[in-house]
Image (cartoon, rainbow, N blue to C red; front, side, top):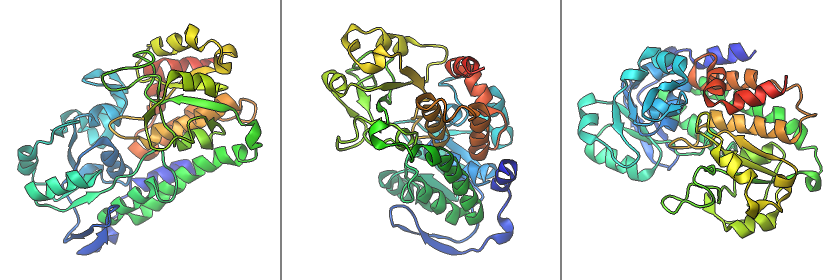
Length: 368
């Protein structure tokens, strides 16, 4: 069934095309396309991933600098390390030569104009207005977060992209795929007594720089008050009552919360520096998670956005860690390969990812 679903994602919708067409994007902006887009540019990896998942990777002609390392997990700036098979085969083998038209901070408008796109996908209104002013082709704001699996979240982004591409059927297949993965986990965790669910602290930016990084705040004290995968996995997010998103909290607050589990995002291949620092910190010795040995790496939820594939993986992985008996038959490697295939159209990506990162492979081996 999964193979059938994945194959459907990458079927052409040309036969169903109906242009000109008018629709609204996630910002309520009215967009009119006179004909089917043939030359698509994306501002960030998240938008590129949606285009590929809906079967239009062959129309992608340029992307943001980090697209090459974020879609197929790679070492940023070093394409010799990471998921090499994915990198070399995705979008018909064109990823190594895909033009880079922006960075985290800059957009190269002149280079974009030379490429003559007929559609641009971006993630926010500010970028959309700049593209429309300087490029002139239709611009669609997708927005959304790849860890918000609510009906008004990421699924809305998929549906808007599908309207632009006449890929509504493929969109519903993709959404159904994600919903089925969520249901697989929630069918168990929703039945757990809320008072018996473990308290969890999620270090969403890792701990590679210790407790606090004064430059960008990417450290152990940064967390996410609203992180769907953790809640769906059956954990109680200790930061859930804090207002806002992506916040830094005092170390004393984390100690006072006294979480039962600590998950530390790790994107440093073969490097457990952050994990070991937290596990062995005298400042945290009183926390239940430390005393019970319940401190774990987890998949990094960011990559110039919030990749849904890695966040669905976190949901499954966290559930398996917190409820080992209930999910003992959940094959994380099989599920991970299916998830990456659905979004990237490439087989075996999670297997590559686990080997490249090292800690996921060590975890999988420990279950044998």
